[in-house]
Length: 465
Image (tube, rainbow, N blue to C red; front, side, top):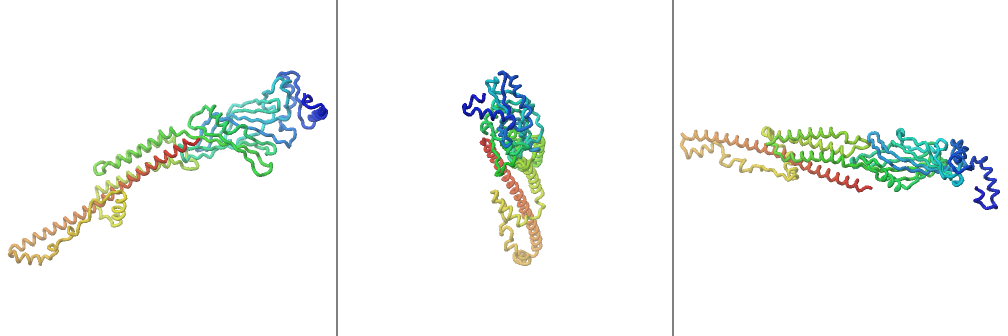
């Protein structure tokens, strides 16, 4: 059969080489007695004894393995264990130089045989972290030109450095490194069997699990170090998956934003007429129960703390600060009359600087000098006043006027003390209202920044393909 394909002048040389090849290289010339599978199987029996060695005629020849996979499903992601669980259809091709036959003579160009009858490469996934529980496929396909086709399902539990900082809008990039476990690059080299775009397109078409995670793309690159052949060849596939955030937005972010907004509008309740502290305490208890119920939906902390956990902690801290501030204002409204006057530095920092910052002016003014200081007639000594009165009124009425003047002076001192106390009480109350207004402004700023951040991250994650 081989001699028919070469010119007559070189047929003797070719015939001599073919006769010597079984002895030197270990190759077998497959000739089928009949064009059917039993005859082909009988002709292939001599090569079954070579299943323990790499199928090359010369040991310096490198075996090229072409491999790719189809992602059939994304089974889950474990943030705590840093694992990605996928289900793959793994396909590999390589050449077996020990065998070839004429498809016309043997009646077929391929045959499926048990894989233990042939040499198979020890290709592993470096990130594999658990036992493969996928069904075992006991057969491989052998083609007439010596090409071997191996395909099998694999349940891959691979380690992945998960970044959940932007949960639930996170995108994970996990690697799967295919390499031989023991053979160096001079013996086995691995090449991608398909382009990354083809793998991604076909995987999206056949994928059946459309749950929490969505496949974005699959890319591959070849590891080629600048050294000799004393290294293990690697083929790295990068799998990018995106979490579907709708469930977490509806069940976590929106209710939390509603509760913090209700707490924001509670500042409109007047603390002097309504017990605002009980209302805020009820909100804190409700928010705590909400977090406990939704605890299973929150991510388990990985390398970084997720932003959503920081958001929930800040919301709870704001509610507690709002309750403490309400208690402070209630205390100022009820007991400020017994407080000492407002210190000068508090007046400058709070009443003047912060009061202008929150556009809340001081409603009480300093008493004018004419109101606080007695006039010239009031500052005169009693003796001079008595002498002036004595010149006008007789001696009998002088004593009565002196007594009346002392009583009026005592009443005046009491009124001045009450005015000073009322001024200090109003200052303390105004300090409380300025603090209340500052916390209200901080609430508005925090809610605005949170909404803008959530929208930006959501849009950015949605636009990534």
